[in-house]
Amino acid sequence: MLDRLPDLVDPIAFAERRRELTGKIKIKEFKRLSELLADNQGEILLDASFYKSGRLAIIQGKISGELTVTCQSCMSSMIWPIDIGINLGVVASLEQADLLASEYEPLLLEEDKISLLELVEDELLIALPDFPRHDFECMESKYSPTELPVDNKQTMSENPFSVLAKLKNTGD
Ligand SMILES: [Zn+2]
Image 1 (cartoon, rainbow, N blue to C red):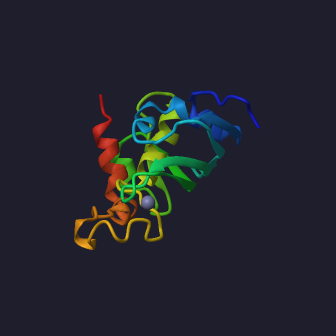
Image 2: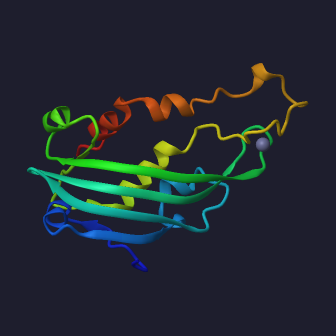
């Protein structure tokens, strides 16, 4: 366990050496994510293994922890548990991403190194629902069901194109 994860890593070199990385990232270091949270104290744990499958560099592991979000029904803060499995195939182009086996999500390598901070933050942003709500009727008398915001967590997490769309948007 590392006290502080390196931010920039070379995933190809790490895969060739079969590196394992386990460490924590302070939630407040995720600037984009912090804006969406009720509280940005605490840490997120990354547990990642780098290895090769044929010529492909793979990053496999887990992102876990707890985020404090605001329930969009009653506006009180609530804990949103995070337990994300990652299985990333490192690709150099969108063409390679298209050819990737479906078990892997493409991770587009635009420079020699990737930012672990950005990688984890992107995964957390995808995992976080737009309208987090308690899973019980915390505000049953105040709103009729039709006035509650639509929960699109499902569409976010099940859309296989969201990662590719994100890749396409990060090009310089
Ligand atoms: Zn609530």
